[in-house]
Amino acid sequence: MKYDFSYPPVYPEQRAASEENRRYARDIFERCVNHLLKQGRRSMALNAESLDQNMQCVYRGEDGLMCGVGCLIDDVYYSEELEGECAAEKGVMRALRNSGVEPATHWYDGAGRYSVYGLLSAVQDLHDKMEPEDWRAEAATLAATYCLYPREQA
Image (cartoon, rainbow, N blue to C red; front, side):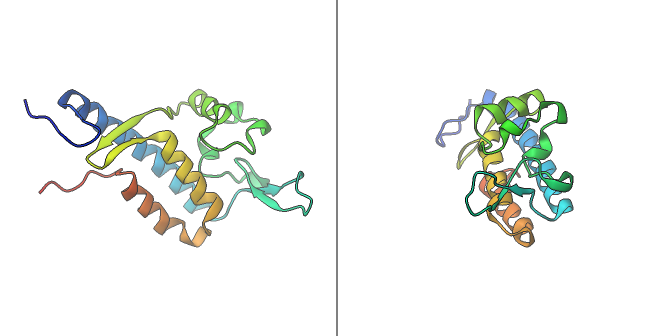
């Protein structure tokens, strides 16, 4: 039996599940990115707690806008209490799970171990910190960083 000695170790019985999980993560990622690219602008709201009345990124904003993670949360599971929480916090994770997204899904690659919740945190940063005109290029970088597409076999 041949084993992969990369770190962390990936055994043959894990590899099939890992590939299925990678496809699942890729589907989630593509839903998020396609939503953002179609929307073309950030989901923002007035930060009432800020003394200078700054705008902040939100899961659900004005005019029906949603961030890349917010688009995965079904309306019935969305609550304003989620605003201000990062994608990896318990309330957001619960809303995602209830909406049919499993954030604890992991996949392996020779470069490491990845998770949907880590990927969603990166998508949240893409929305919150990058300019919309840079989203497409940054999404391609994220896809490579998270090994969402299998490498070519030599």
